[in-house]
Image (cartoon, rainbow, N blue to C red; front, side, top):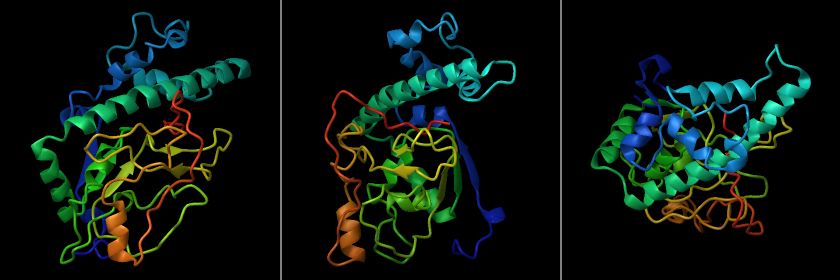
Length: 265
């Protein structure tokens, strides 16, 4: 039954956490490990609000949520200071997790991952993930999934429902979406960003993937439009002639900065 005929109640729902990414690659950190990686930065490690001895017992996610939101027992100044600390941790998460994603992509996926993606595709499953990493999208980006009865590969943006959109200024070509699984990223993604001053999320946009399970390139604010995942150009050549890759606008390269995770909630 096609996606437009199949009700949501008929879909398989699969919930994924940090353990799924760890199963894909030993390079991927679990929740507290990610928090402790951030503490490698002296200004974060020395902050008095950080628990002594680091994060244990799954505490990092709860602690991060607490400093991200206004607390009624704190003053406005204290809440704003906590939000500033949250933004510093967000930047650290983008940097540390981005490096681990690059390592995982370089090492290659385990044998079961291909079958997992195919089963999700053919069953039209709904995947709920709390992970920031784009490893599932990178798997789809290799072009291994195809429409039933067709030759066209599923493009990675189709599994996230083409949301959020590309940044303003990039080329947009519309087509009927592939009938495939649905990926819902509840905490955001490393290749999404927005304006911190926007409480509505209307400024949210996506960037290209860092790679597709081959030697990748680090996604930063400077090279967001400098590369296109493998299969992107061929996908558009098959659907549109002539084809053209969707890209974010070119920006001056800043190799010292990585701010790919402005949406980490």
